[in-house]
Length: 211
Image 1 (cartoon, rainbow, N blue to C red):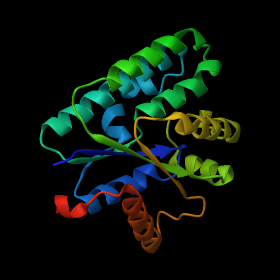
Image 2: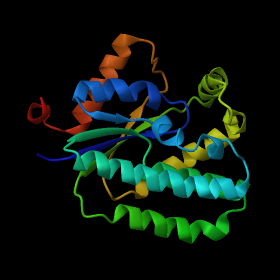
Image 3: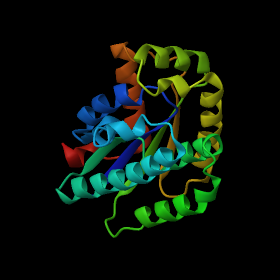
Image 4: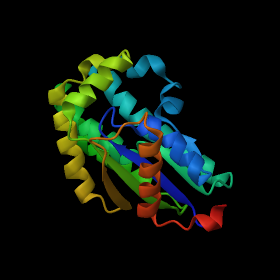
């Protein structure tokens, strides 16, 4: 049986956390949220010092990879994950100027190359949730009221969106499926159902094998 890693990728507050569990349930897959990883070191990710940002990047990427491999080795066939290694790399490239981390760019690239070089085979699918309404994203972020959300300005979200567009065009490690969610309402069950079916159609995974 083939193994599939489905990554929900995209800007902050586009709906990854809300959509992920519903998609995983539809696919009878294992859902791995960002909070499942971040809860392992909550004090670190809220720290805005440059050194903490660098350590956070290394820790997140390493734990993310370890979790993926361990789940697949336990006979899991499909994993739906909130953000992936490429997302970590995109965030680092946006953070590096703010925190003067340019000197570590080569190191981070080497780290991601090592993490991607493992013997366990699985097909990676990236669902790129794209929202061009930055004003809507800012409103959603303000409603969340998370400890580190104050840094996510409209300018930051725009830079992040540009980085996503750039890096996802260069990604050659899997299949990237962009989906426009600018007018998507996560609280509308009909829209959610339609979006999930659209995602599954793009994935081209034969669900009969997993049901």
